[in-house]
Length: 90
Image (cartoon, rainbow, N blue to C red):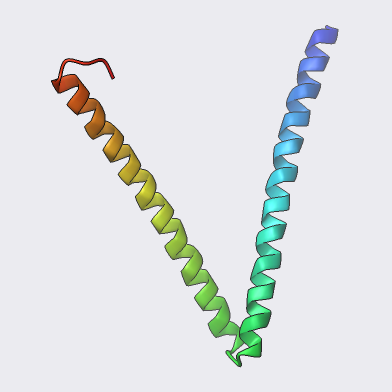
């Protein structure tokens, strides 16, 4: 029975650690966004325009990451097929 409690405590600690790490990353992103918006305001861009630019940039960065990931998967699959065609184990 004590082993079960220890296991549950370890799992809870891991989940809490992950949540804290994620929260820290989100806070860092928020700080960076605030800095960017403040710098944009200094350039006399309207807040809504700057916010829209930040949203569009984030969306494009996300899409680029997804495309790079898919490209890596495709390259990996092609590599495995080439190795299989040559009779080598992948």
